[in-house]
Image (cartoon, rainbow over all chains, first blue to last red):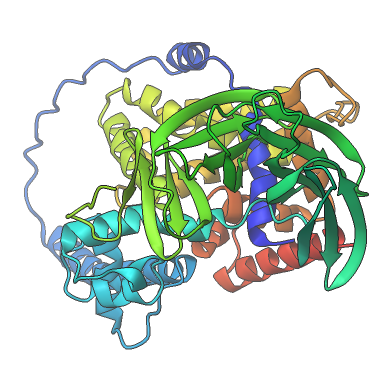
Length: 342
Length: 176
């Protein structure tokens, strides 16, 4: 089980219901009432004695030594924090001094990106850096960092089954249409195969031991003659749990990517060569459509290799292009600061 | 290891704790907004039932107010708060009467949020108490190994070792 999987499971703690804030704060106020402002004490007029002078000198010396130790302890703490950060984000610290490592760390966490060595550190581990077509300024580095770091932290679907692969084959039927056969492999061993009728498979999405299969039905008896998106969920032993059709209202839709979300829903990214839109639809584990939207999208070119949700937007890796769904459009984000619209 | 979101939360948390120390009681509301979820969850993994976890949350907030001036600016607000939480939670465990029921997956099955949280307890049950806290504080709570060590009262090396051993146990248990 990957560390990420353990963390995902532990984040179920977030579903614990919180007590009412006002009640908690009210009890705090009742138990620890606010203290009234205290009157200032008059300074005493004691005479200064030699014994006090010696004690004061000793205390000053101790403070100086203690202060030095505190400074060293703080430096070590900052350095360790910086190294933890480098390790967390797969940045290489090689070739940097202690001081430089701390400066890079502060430069990134403060989101300044003005320190001259920061880019060299990010180049070692920042996803998307390698495909930049021109040098990045501070703003470009910052935007790439804020967008790109999620690739590593979110990962690839839910990862509950390692080394599992699904393959699909399509068999045309005499008279039109065809069936698909889904095969499941783990560690190169075939576990099962299952025929699903009247579906041309576009994408599969394995989660929690099951697999969501998406495709379209090419059968001529389809009433609109424009195939709907056909989806079905197969259990771990290949049982078809359910099969449904959803109308994307797009001609000949192709599901390019299926994203499994933390709330156990799926988001389908579907395009059509006959349309300049992408249909982004979210369904639940029972195949019910929860939400949908259409965004402007240029379907020409590579397929989408990966999608991650970042806040209320999506990042997509289309071939080698890093793109972002924003304001109803999918935009090319390769060159930060000079966004190229599709 | 802190994510950017955690760092931003902790910047705000540091400001709120300093305001509280300066006598601004309204800062407590900010602290609740920033950390109540974390306090409740960490407490829950120790006391294993929601009623006690809520009491720990309440007592942590009271402690933060009562001893507000103890917070040293520049410290980690997260580590400071979770150290208090842990101490109160362990005290709660010690004072608990033997017949207090712990939540099991079968209880309140209509409460999906609770059901999911109980699953986490089931996950962590194979760990020792310190291993459980090392994993919870570092992986879920976002504390560094050094901060975890300080919270648990052990060396950093020991904290790291407990954490790695805990991960290895969980991997071994759930890869069968």
